[in-house]
Image (spheres, helix red, strand yellow):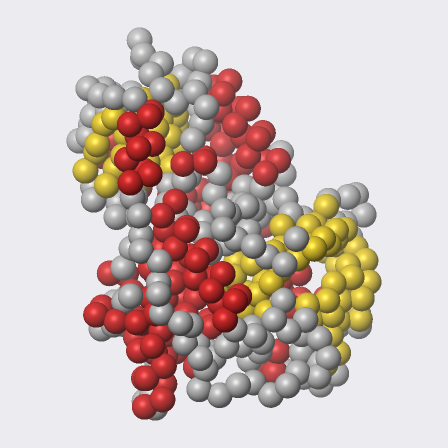
Length: 417
């Protein structure tokens, strides 16, 4: 009989969740004397989801039965995670091990998932792995921290919270590095959408979107999974052919007026966490920042003295100059994200797009990223478009554009913050 002492394990960025999951499920690590090795698990994790995606790629069809009735690779990341949870519910498991339950899940989806997990917790042991204190499930009654691959047990949730309160990362005190040269004045607005509508296979995604981004503005784009956020980003980046023939203006030119995709992208600094997967594991932190001057994956030209100087300023700004020759994988996850943001920002582009930069970070790491973003907003003329499901403490965008789903495609509601 499993004792329903539900357990929460907070992971710092110095620890790896996959290592912990393996150690728990094989009995190498015991939780307050509990050996999970003989018990049948239901594991909710990115690795579990990746296994289903690989199965789908190899064998075709839909790897998971879900409410969406379509293959995983056609779902948003949030939809994929809900499909995985749906699959696990019907598994004859003795305990549920949940890693980053809410990552990439919109607010409504989080509430629905929490309701489901609370029902499961009435009859099955639940072990939650999390990086953010605010994600803790309400019924957890035993708390641990996994730090530097060491498990620390706490006698009470109050002591666990005290340990987290004591963790601090020093904010940067360096001014924001300035570019080698400035972009020429932009004719008109950076982005202007007039009545933009997009459908795929007769399914409406967004309808009648009116949206203008001006120089130096700070925007946050929010909306539930599948509402069309990725569609709007692909229109802005010039990658989506649905922009042709519509009233879409990018960096002073109407889409389809003879511009190339490069003409659009040269005005954008772009961050998402998957960019790092395209770089060699041997690329140094310094080289990654310098590659931002040419928007290249890797460094293929000899950098100028000015570029080396500016990369050094960014490294000092982030407190990483002493690690400049180390591979980026050497860094904790939050600092990896900072380097990628610096790469996107090194030229001070007219528009900086940040796609979920705090996903999978712990509280201290997320605070570090938010401080960096706020300093960019304050000390540069770049417009910022921040995309995230979560409302982050300390993040203060000027404007919020929210996509609200309807049968005829999502509509945009814009408000000044």
